Structures are given as structure tokens and as C-alpha cells.
Image (tube, rainbow, N blue to C red):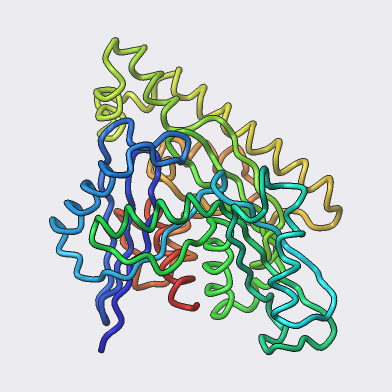
Length: 338
């Protein structure tokens, strides 16, 4: 039977879905009703389930098995080095690696790991274990599972955004070995914020969230044109009367560049000799030409590329959706590799 999976990324304003049904692949992005998600958290699960079921029906999505992206704010993710131990011992010790990060009872969380490249997946490790480890609240995972079941999906796995990015980079490096070991940054320009995630090769290094995003552009247009934010968003999406070239919008583009630069400068300073060599843009903001142009001019010495045109497998390089749906694609790829 042909494989059929979907990767789902629920943002603050859009739900992005990557679909593989046998040899067929496609991307779907659906605008969600307002106030369904706040700061990455689904606040109306039953309404979201109804919405997802409608999206599934309207887009004729037959695949039921799905992998869901967990936003950085919904999980803890870190690289862990441990001594030689059995898998059973690892499962016992893993919660202790998060004792300085989680709140409440450790038993309220679920934990998982992936063994880093070059280490055995057998029960005995030869010299030690290099792991990517993740923790998320059980109630969160169970809630997502129930919500997706009501929408007609079967949740097969939740994937932290950092792990999804790592899988995407690992997949890319298999066909571009000359890029191995290079330091790159993924800049996800979302509605409420911008997430900056740094990698050495495909190995996660650090992430930072900037409280600035496409919502600020909407609000700037709304103030300038004296319209509500929803109308302002439609103006932005169509660049009605050249609103994206308004000085107030340009100020936001410049502010965003300054904030990104602060993060990169701090990383480069803290990792002497390991400067970031390339940037990849994704998210809704990556579809705003004026913003992308400003970023490329600001970082003139740093190659800046659209993630959809470079990192995604060619089969998913849909020019109209790829940068927006990149995390959904990453979740699908990482989930299929489980």
C-alpha cells in the first residue's frame, strides 16, 4: 500500500499542511478564524478540530496519519551528551536532563530522543551517547491528539520545530555534502514573532524569539490607512496602493534587521571562528518582497536564500507555498524517517 502522511504546522493565523499520498505531494495553507491560536497555543481545540476537518474535506486530503510541529514555546529541546548506558537506562535518566528547565512534576512531561549521527541505535553504545532530547507536557500532547482525532487525523508523532529544521538540513546535506559543518541560520518570519534558529551543519546550536512580526506590519498599515487590522492584512497581501512601501512599514523592516543582527553578532562573538555563513528565510514574512529585499541589503555579506527554493526537496518546491509551508514539510520528512 502506498504511503500516505501529512505534516501539520499550526501558526497564529494560518494552518499549513504538507501531504504525501503515494507518489503525489502537495501543500495546503488555510487562513484560520481569529482568536483560535494565541502565542502558538490552540485556545479553542474543538473549534480548531472543526476547522481542520473542513480543510481536510475541502482539499480532499485522504491521508490520516499525521505529524504535528510543536512550536519552540511548547517544548524543550537540547543536545545532550551522556556516558555509555543501555536504552532502558537512558529512558530513566532522560528526565533529569531537563530538571533545570521544566516546571512542576517531571512525570507530567513526555520525553523522547534521537541519537545523533554516527552513534549506534543498538541497546549498547560504544563510547557514549550524543542525543537530541525533547520534553513536552503530556496534557499538551494528549490534547493535540484528541483534537486531531476529531478532525479525522491520527497523530503519529509530535516534532519540535528545532528537530524538524534539523531533519530538513540533514536531508539537504545528503545531496550537498560540501555544505557540511557550515553554520547557518533559519529565520522564520511569522505573524506574532520571528524565530531565529542556528545550526552547525544540521546540529542545533541555539534559538531566539523576537517579538516582532507580520502583525506589526498589519498594525502599521491599519494606522496609516485608518482601517481595521483584517482589512490592513488584505492590503498587505495584495500590496494595495503600494502599502508595503510606506515609510512606517520600512521602519519595521529595518527594526527587524537590527534585531536579527543582534542575535547573529552575539552568536558569532560567543562562537569565535564559527561565524554564520548563510541565512534561510521562511514563514509569511518571507513572501513580502520589500521585507526580503531589505534583509538582503542589510546583510549584504551574508547569502540570504528562500528556504523553499533551496532546502526543501524538489518535489515540494511550490513557489507559491513552499516558504510558508516549510515547517509542515520538515515535519512530514522527519516523521517519515521515524
